[in-house]
Length: 188
Image (cartoon, rainbow, N blue to C red):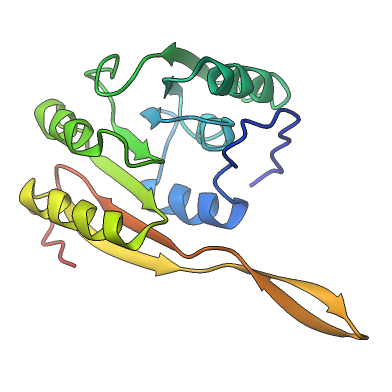
């Protein structure tokens, strides 16, 4: 996985590189896939996904963040067909997506309803707040989307008094599933 350059800040922080690696591994994107990034923010996930998927649609409701996605995408050529849409999900979501990522919690239940209605095969949602994670798990279960829940934390080392200490990032709760989750025997 190549390095992503993010020269434009969206004032919300990108999904961390380690989290993007796990996310992309869970999605298993291929050049035949249409991937949707709901809440693109800096475009970090859009860029990484565009390196694997043949087609990407990035949805962002805030103009400043959509511009950050556009500018950061320009700094990271991908070769994929990427469409940027300024709208609030679920409005503007394509009906032919193979994989979808929810990077935030705004309107997530309506997005999950759309996922079920359009048969999105793979969906991943990242959550940083514990209470929202619980709500999201229930919403995934109610829609028979849940395959697994993964919680992880990343820490980065730094030198302190001639030794190595660590700064840790906030934990991330990752919900993984899709319309085939129940049929595949997924559980969490």
